[in-house]
Amino acid sequence: MQNSGAMKRRCWTGDDAEPLMLAYHDEEWGVPLHGDRELFAKLVLDGFQAGLSWRVILNKRARFLEVFDGFDPERMARYDRKKIRQLLKDPGIVRNRQKVAAAVSNARAFLQFSERDGPFGRFLWTFVGGVPKQNRRRSLRELPARTRESDAMSEALVERGFRFVGPTICYAFMQAVGMVNDHLITCFRHRELQDKTGHR
Image (cartoon, rainbow, N blue to C red; front, side):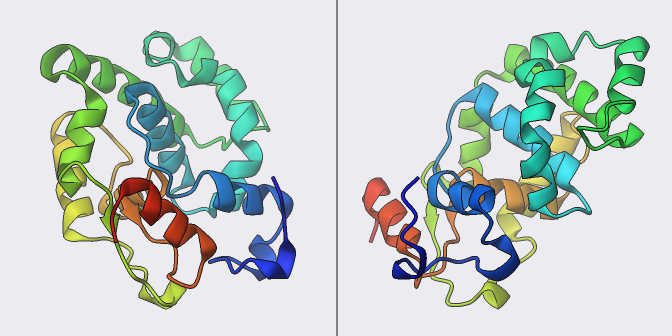
């Protein structure tokens, strides 16, 4: 990552200016994702984030990927009590029994959904009409915790057996996977992502 420091205006500063967070902001956050597996993995991580800062999850992401088999839903769906006990002993992840259990049950829900209803990504993107919503936030105070779209997504996912997918988690997910462009208009990434989607 090229870091031009003060030359680039970003959404996040201060404590969030560590290299890992800067790289995430500059290269990942808000970039549209459409792949079923990628979206599933991001939804699982956002479930683990509940009640925590994203910095915590980002610093543990590599270990999460390692012990959760790259968030492969087929493998995760087969996790048994022994595997869950092993996960709960691993200091490299968030050792929350409910969240670990939810990750496993969400893998099963994902497989059931894919078999019954088709592409997971296509379904999720319907909540924003299939294209990124271009917001024009001027300050972080303007960022909502939830929206009508995240409420609807949460309700639909819960109906299909998913857990740890409340409206706030769903909105954080929508921001992260580019369903909404919530980079501040003063941030260099807002224009870059807007230009990539062809929206003005």
